[in-house]
View 1: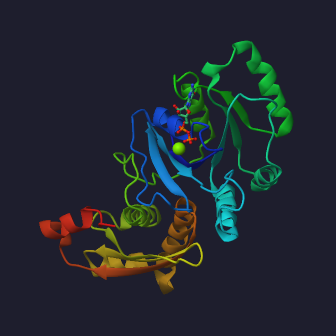
View 2: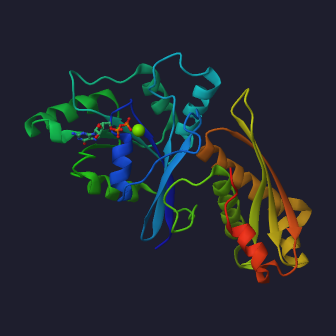
Length: 298
Ligand code: GDP
Ligand code: MG
């Protein structure tokens, strides 16, 4: 079986239960604290590993927030993210009153052509007989791929959501290491993602002996743009040549693919500059290993 992976965006109004659902889905109490709590960009909320794949959960602030809070450019960015993810989870509550969908959101969801699951959370608080009529009303509002009622708090229905998510994931790479669950610094994640692209695109040609460090991670304040400058460290000139490729094509491909994923993860435009540096025998130098292995203080 091929490895499967994807990005899952969690959207919904405040207090609908997004954080609770994530904790239940990831199977342990996480401190979902972004390093920048006030960020208006996407946040990587967590990575869920299962046998044969992984899903990366993203927060897209700004969507379904009170109007006028955000700069237009940032909101535009959030909408763009919705077109780039693999699956969108729209969380709602089963009360009060009639279901309704924000017209702007509806338009964007339609345009995105990404599968949208409607998650009706907090079903522990309603009578079961009300559920089916409610689901029918929601189904009439939008062609949701799936409508899943659950209780993030009690866990009822969460396993079904988990299995459904897995069914929808396409073949893809492991974006992050197995042991990574919570959100580390974005700098570290960026380095991991670039390293993953190196492995993915050079296959067996450049095995171990490759490390990536992010030298610059600079966020513009006037618009959602992040400048990232990263170095790919190798042990040998021959590896460097493979990494760069004919007329620089390989490195360019690595950069393009990494940039695309980074833009989804970070919810901002990314300007990515990659350099390849040869450092003989760094894999045998404990000091360097430590340096490459340990996340950069943010
Ligand atoms: P968020 O703002 O969307 O992240 O919402 P939270 O996850 O912080 O949840 C808001 C409140 O709703 C908290 O008090 C949760 O305990 C509660 N909550 C979340 N999911 C459920 C559920 O399935 N059932 C019930 N009864 N309460 C829930
Ligand atoms: Mg929350």
